[in-house]
Length: 361
Image (cartoon, rainbow, N blue to C red; front, side):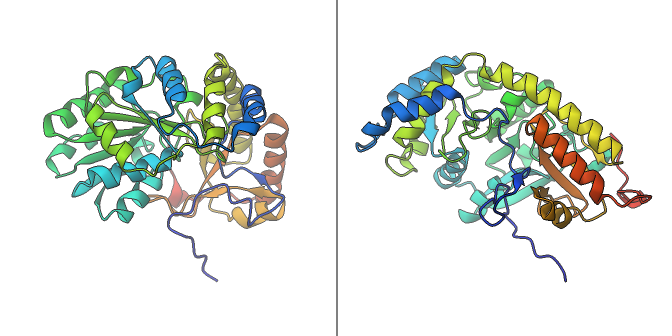
């Protein structure tokens, strides 16, 4: 029977698959900062009042953390809320996305009736973003969505190329919406310092991944175009950022070494998973985030699910097929258990990938 996959399927469906270890959603394996958990407990008695709809304390904390002015910050109910607001408020005739890339941009664009133009990331280039994307300003796009590091590949954008993209976008009046939700897991520099020079740059992020707050829904954007931010504010519902999310976010930003501790642990565990994938004969993309994309022509999703491991199928990423999968970097114990299960699923004496799927990096 042919498998039917929802177009905008995302990871993290532990509600359908109860009791599994979820390798399909890439959340910080260290969990939520203990300071955030404690802050929620301490403030629980005050959750009977409406939250500050201007999130003044959270905005100030984010501004200090990112080195910008408070008026350059917008807070939303997760990054997906920001994608939706952006497409609704700006509503260009067309927008460009890369492929493969996170489907949330296309989801927001389609729901707002915006034409989608895709820029293909080629397997021959290792799925890297190259200067072949230049010239986008002549294709009638109003927004260019970029993801750094890209999801699902985990690859980051070369800084010089990003500047060239921003230069072209400024000259052709294109808004660059740059998703940095996973950047905290890498050793790359944020594009936030470029915002003052490029008013057409909107840097988007969230507490979802680095601070393990997927269930609290807290995202934010940074831009020097205050008028645009006002439009994005008006496009959202009132009290979009809950009080629990606000107090948890403020507490998380107060943990100064959280990103550093996370990177050290993820680097170590990602290397462990890479070695395990290689030992199983898998070809993987050498990314920098807290997830890995790998290729195997043997069916893995159902066999691993039967063993209690939920992974991300990638065939509904435009530009990928059913031989591609993505797994999260979790704790050492969980990663070792996953690799043992994976090894038992790969048929002995049979290559886990075919010559036709050959891709070098």
